Image (cartoon, rainbow, N blue to C red; front, side, top):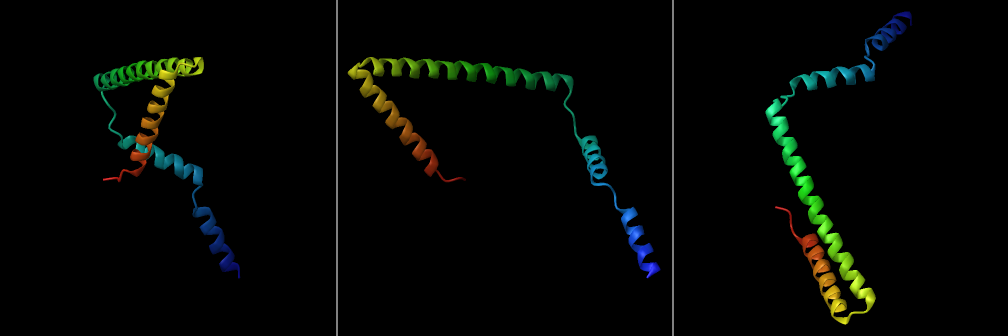
Length: 104
């Protein structure tokens, strides 16, 4: 019985703490990373900033357009009610078709 208790205590001591194991494996993986050069990092930053600005302008124009269209519909302009219905139908149809598309 004493031999079994010693064996169990040895296996408990041999186990590594999960947090320590995580930190060690993380450090090992970070050492394998190929970090970009300063020039590559700056080029990627410029791309991200440009895309962010373009998307902000695009979404701002869309927001302004839809807000203006909704204001015209609320004001009771029949032509804009029809345009709003057509735009809504096109958007709903596009969402439906995109949902039905098969992945390649």
